[in-house]
Length: 550
Image (tube, rainbow, N blue to C red; front, side, top):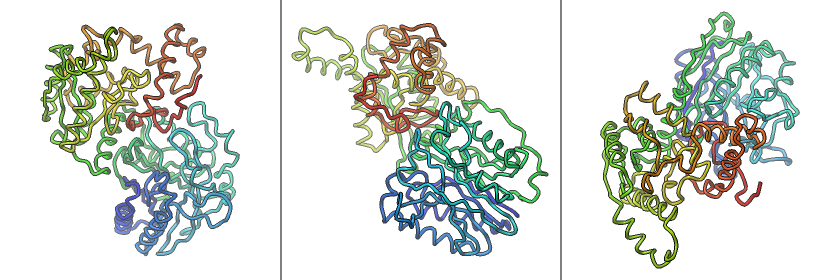
């Protein structure tokens, strides 16, 4: 039996677009004499439609799209993912389903059992879990069809998250009694740099445990903050990877399931963490603009490393002709900041404007003088500069239609060192899930492996917001190596101050950093969506009460 893995980039809610992609892939599979073609989870509507699933008209349109796809399956079988209606009176009204279609007919619908409700996932909000376990028989083969999380059930795949405390059922244990010839897993598994290898390990372990080959089809593309890396796989019964689709792009792979154990194992190629992060960020920006109908971007270019890195990513995603920058120096901006920013803009071959904000800054201070009378100048006056710059960027966006890119990094977002209605402005946060130390690493990676585009002085000079004379970041923050280690243990690993102290003996700094993180929750609630690179990005995947005391 010849099987095709169709790894596609779907657009949430764009049912006509998605259906055409699926139908085109089916026709390609027919031309290559494929018996069965497999698509990813919720491929008909894109992952995840969230509360669009509560719209009855949307579900009806999904049904119509499914029926249209079915008409194109003469002479072939296909597995597609879609929401389907729960006919029972109890539970949620929908299932997250894998639909098996053969020769113009829907043969069987398999529903997802394990509905994730952690981090960015909230499937139980809309879907009812499956409790019926069936096998599909096709061309004398018995196929066990599972959906994403159904294959992760027996593993502690997400750090300290123990699924055994939440899920009592194991779909593969139920299905293994039928002795399937192979297992299919359709997925919408988003990328995170500290999760990429775990997926392959889970698949290999299950293939070995059940002595059964696994065909895994993931989607690719970005949907706002979530980026799907693809990487669809075929694992033989010995747990060896024998087919692998490309990462961060659409792909079409075929395999003959009858000789899968005779195929050569793909040798593991170790790629840099930053190879994947760069590709993920470029894809995230590109798809955000394409799927939102935007074309041009603008950002504030300060001469610092954060804005330079964001510009490099934006130019790589959108093309230099679609990115513009505004340089907004004040009296506190050093000469090298302007020259470094101009150098960066010219290296990227983008259009840029220099708008000096000093007159505006003085005008603001003069306007507020009567109210601020009797107080000492301080952070309020410093933040006025950020807010002036934010207003200029938004005015430019409003006038010319260029979408503002936010370039705050994860370290400063974590500790609240970003100004609301100033440098927090932007439609999408490009590097908001990248710690400051990673910003430097990624910048060096781009210069060494993509293009020498970020000025060396931007990378080597001491980081500074330049909001007062001779200001440096380490005037008020720990060294970034220490800061980022504390933040990582507190945010990603969820360790307490006592536990972090065992790793880095600096309790005063630990308490100081955690206090900053806690106090800044209200700011993060108002920040733009952040491209997710880790297992714990700020945003929907980390929901902390704003008014909590802990």
